[in-house]
Amino acid sequence: MKRGSSPELGEIIDGIDSAKGIVLDFAKIEYVSSAGIRQIVATHRKAKELEADFSVINVNPEVMSVIAITGLDKKLNIKREY
Image (cartoon, rainbow, N blue to C red; front, side, top):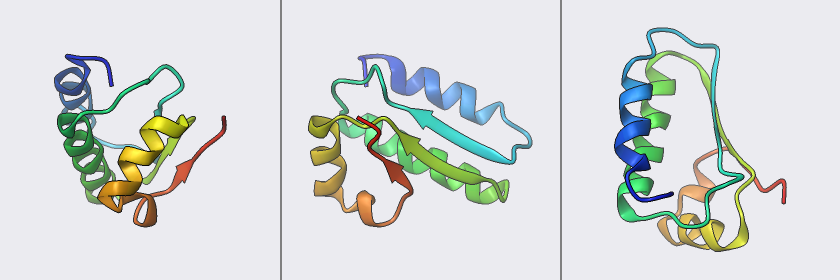
């Protein structure tokens, strides 16, 4: 994630009161930090709370390797549409 985008994403997600699905599109994301990983997890939790579908799409290989190190690739719906 771009620096500073994790807090912005958190504010957006916190403002969601209802949803059928939440999709994080990583098409323009070249790097994900530990803060970004925490925000992905927090967004997943929010989706579960709302009983909404959750997925992460367009994950590039570099970001995917970070996600894989955390084991989230086995727990989340991640689509590598690259």
